Amino acid sequence: MALPRRKRLLGKRLLAALGASTLGMASLLGCAAAWGQSRRVGVWLTNSPSPLYYDNARIDQAVGELAEAGFNTLYPNVWSRGTTFHRSAFAPIEPALAQSQANSGGGKALDPICRMTAAAHRRGMQVIPWFEYGLMEPADAAVVQQHPDWILQASDGSSSVSMHGKAMVWLNPAHPGVRQRLIGLIGEIVQRCSVDGIQLDDHFAWPVDLGYDPYTRALYRKDTGNDPPLNVSDRAWMTWRRHRLTELLRELRQVLKSKGTGRAYVSLSPGPFRFAYNKWLQDWELWSLGGLIDELVVQNYAYSVAGFAKDLQQPALVKASGWGIPVEIGILAGFGGRTTPMDDLSQRVQIANAKGHGVIYFYWEGLWGQYAGPEGAALRKQAFLQIHAGSPPPPVLPPMTLSR
Image (tube, rainbow, N blue to C red; front, side, top):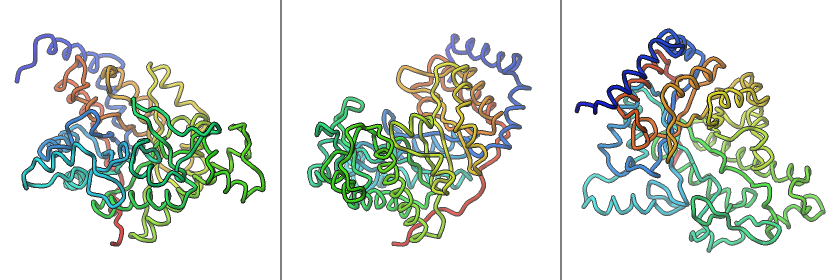
């Protein structure tokens, strides 16, 4: 299909800029050479908002397009708003997917994560499912009603927070029931699809203002002889809760190794260190140095290129390059009303590469889908292919599996 005249002109201008300016072909070739120091060219994929998960042909097409554009790793969301994208022993299936399966009339069942994994593996790509909502659940979820003692509370007794217009609660990472369920959810997708790893993000957390529920109060009192201080930023109180979150991560890793092939690959995608450490009680420096995570994908959604470059200078991120694990940068390609132009993305990729970082784009529909913006799909596909030219694949690792 021919491109509209306006898009053809826009495309010529952008490709001319990519070819003749400091973002030109020499720059792109330099960028490609820098990929030799990087580990991944990835993208997050999700159902919200996207029709991707609900059509097998669409999944196959997407994986093929991504492979052609130089991507080597997919991070599909597998845990969203208290639901999964497969029949689960631990949580309900996502309603729209369940409806799509019902409408298939006995046809080929939709199993988006396993299908995506198989399609990616055929093309030499890796798949690391992303547990987006971590320890969050809808306030009206059955598990919340059945286990009120699993829910973290603020000092005033409240537990509900609003996220994307929906009331949500946080499950307690110190509670054995919560731990067993989360590890079960993660183990389930590893067992079903033979994926290459799993990813947690900033929702695998303990919000600093929570921890005053009866269960946590009793546990803290048992461990310390004291009641939790009302000052949520009390250092001892923060450290105690941070250690409980670390224990859950350690237990998850041990289960993945002991019940599987002896290999666990855990990716973490947090925000900047100070914010993660003080707001979400995530100590990703300790987790990295302690061998609890295998990959760090730090989100950097700065509005300007200058702001993006500045954020890469944060001390913890600079130090992370010497920790012996891959360090990637999460970059916004497009979402909602915000689409990053390709010349801007080119600069960000080049800056990240120069520091030895790979890049993971948020998200699939922002590459060349519904949030491609005025540049359009054809132009953006061609530009991504140029940016990723010559990028090496990630090291070959045996897929993670769990015994049944």
